[in-house]
Image 1 (tube, rainbow over the protein chains, first blue to last red):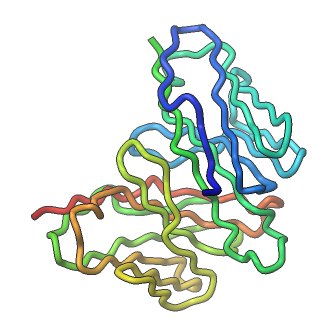
Image 2: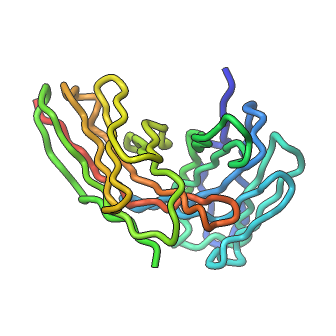
Image 3: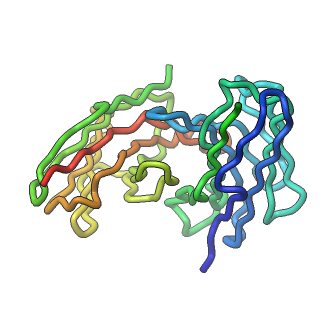
Length: 118
Length: 112
């Protein structure tokens, strides 16, 4: 089945120790997103890739970086995690909005990585 | 500013009907989505409205009024597995990449 896969599902790191989260997709979607979601809050968009074009949200801290080496994979790097970075990190994909016949262009989410910072 | 409002929490009884409201104020509008999110899991797509009116999909229906900036999700014949958060999200047509503006979600608690 076509899907969005995230690894690991649970990540524990120490304060200040770099961590990398990964996402892969078999949907062949052009757009990939990274969201941060804290308990009972809306998902907060950190980055998205529109094909190879990288888009950084204005309020995404410099501590967060992202890489998309190819269409299928995307990584989120947290260079120096703080206690406030503990959250669920969600990867999502979608088709390009302009693709004809795909008016929904809904986002498909991976299962998420829950990050704990000690 | 861009804003989406939903009730924080609702409680309903198994077998009953519940309506979850969403109001939005956005620069533009190019569709409204409802997602279901079980605790500790990722959101899953439920419905999409871009024109005014009611869209029905099994036990779930979603309504949109663009002039009022208002939508609701209607859940019928509630089951215990419907206990989840329901997120409303609007696609802003004036965003070059059609990003979604998300509400914080409504936590729905189903009681036997």
